[in-house]
Length: 456
Image (tube, rainbow, N blue to C red; front, side):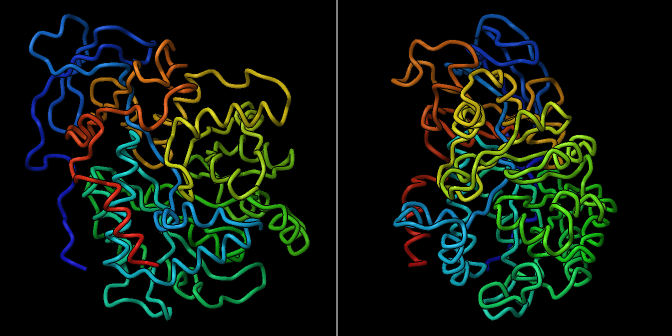
């Protein structure tokens, strides 16, 4: 892979400093407001007021904070439109996913991830949580730089204009009591101590760089034996870093866990110190009442990925019940069957309607908060996701005059009517990334076609 950039967002050459935007409407902490002036200095918001536009650059429609995609597997994007063929379930889909994983190297992963992250930017995403376990070469041996794949992902995010929480993932077994096999050998460092040594190297390489957070992940109870989990949790504590884990995505996972450990996956994670206010349980689809209580009482986040969960026939998780007991909800596009955080947000409500036969589980502002401030905080960027002075200067402007949004009003116009195609302007960390629906890198569709085509 080519030489990676060590330049973070903040203070980069070419940042537009200062710059003033006039928003036709903006979602501020106290609600949607007309005629909002936002002054940016460097990567941060310096001042917010109201008034006529004057010489400020005008942003039509409704401007919201940047979106946080809290759960991504960048290479899964190569499966869109092909993994949906035929019948099957999560486990048959997983075999197709392994086929793609086997073909990637640092250079091809850089090209693919750059295009995927650019697609996210076009959809209004300014920060991504990359759940990264594709660590080593195809035969399982480390590259000369054991973190070459992680560096590729970070460079890709920077090129696309996103901040990134690289959630470096510990992956040690092919299932509960099942040895690793085939492509899975790329994912492992042997044991948690080996993972920790490599992850600490990666964290040291980006220390002090404000656009990168090196977090940790326990892949799942399937892939990390309980006795190994405390090492990963300790990395999170030592580095004050986010800690994510796939939880109860499949009923088969729950059954195997209970049969082996006489406990649910959430109970196992609780007993091994994995849950807590820096932790995110991804999916959390099939939860018992005790699981919901443990997640809520520990202050953990739950990342819902509705478009993936329906694409893989996983089921509908109890998001409202978990939130009512104290868990904070975030959103992710996971396998990238769709990259549209507005669709993820409304699907949380709409899926609950299907499961409960009732409407009105979530307010629009709650869903948009899950996609913005709560998501950013769960990824280790608490100073983002709000339009307030001092926050990261992330502005996403959404058209209110498209065939989808025309006639709709307020936040409901964004959450229940808009799609990613209605995003026309994105400012990320003070830099203009998307203008008139076009990414600064050029034709993102062509980038995706080229990167994915090379893997077939």
